[in-house]
Image 1: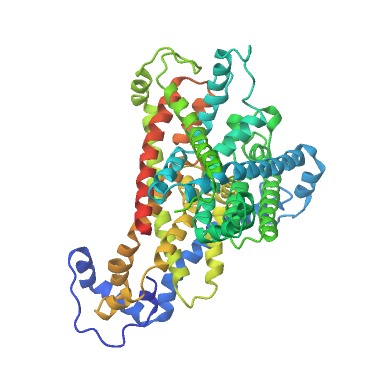
Image 2 (image 1 turned 90 degrees about the vertical axis):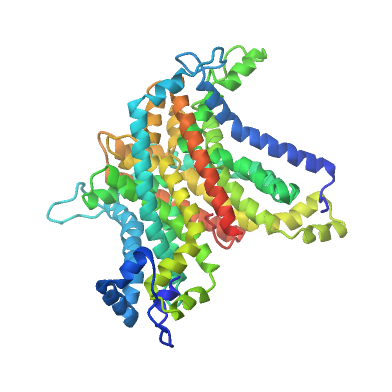
Length: 327
Length: 263
């Protein structure tokens, strides 16, 4: 652990230089290594530089750098940038967003869509998470969970593609309904909000399941028993004991699902249609088309980032979860 | 153990669980069964069965190239993300460093930024630093995406590590580097293996970053995407089935490793 680098070398001097076998032995015996390690052991500044250097540079350059560049480009008046570095900055790219319904209508649509998907996922997944965490015998719990995890290793694109098999005009559902004589012609389900929502819930249910499961599993059974003894019925036990105690899981799960849904990209390309244009597609065309408009695209991305993160922040503030657990 | 509900809610929950399992598995099962259909188009019902799509796919140069390319990117991503992730975790776990909480928050930043925004900001960034789209750009973006997860996994394990382990090594005469290689790394190993497989899977799986940062050479998801858009035949299903089984096996192994590591 890092303490090994940080603590000053031992107060008592080592009995004798230890010998190591293999490549470490050869390395430890070399004079260059001995010199370097001596330098490290003797100087706190060198130790700190080695420990901090790469992580800080990495975080500054690649975690903050891209967002910063996106912000900078979004404020540029002309793009590509002027060669002499004389850039004019403007807010007009942001103004465009509010002036043009072509842009903010899909944006509002995306926010509503993501909120609905989050709600649906919560309602669908909560009983399943509860079942695995509390009803299944501990012996079988891992197996019950693995069965749910299995589909999620299939990858985003393959799962989206699989949804097409189910919902297409000649897909399983329509063919089954026709065989049963319930319909004459296929119900168009693909390329609608239904298929998009269905597909997105299918993609992201896991992000809801894991936080909920770990939160519900931690609820002490004695509390539920106590509520039972005091005369609470099933609904009251759920409403007054289980639900409040699983709040952290609900907050994490909803935040993750919401943030993922806002930025979902493959699903609208494959499952969406002309009426279901949502904001990620709008942004993508600004970067990927023949007449790309990077400053506008950057400005819209910043708007989307700020709005989605602050929505989640607000949600956490209102519901009162402490933090988002990523895993 | 007592049951908190009388039998009706319990039955309903059990039914709900199995319905959910069916919901998760049905589309994938349909997708896989379609790969055995003896016809040139995708549609139910399946009347004749064949293995010829598999024979075709396994000789398809494009598919095999895409597998190799995706595997290479996943390998490079895993190596970079593991080194950098562990390094950041060491910083966050070290006591007495100013702003540890802030470093940790910033290290996790790419995990909360929506995927599309992440991809676009990377696309802008690589143009600013004059890196062309293609292999290096993809690896960079995948690494940025994977680092937060490695940090979290390594940190969880580091926090459970008894401090006196490295102290003991130092007292016995090991220098800081050797104590790190011989004590810290082996202790981290179970968490690292899980994290590495996680990196491999997210990299192979990634679509949106590769979409914006990729060159002309397709990765697996890009190839499947191009085939789906270019008209569908059960050949895609055969490809997807092979990829699915491979990634599911890797994922199952990762799950096994991380569960074992937590015990």
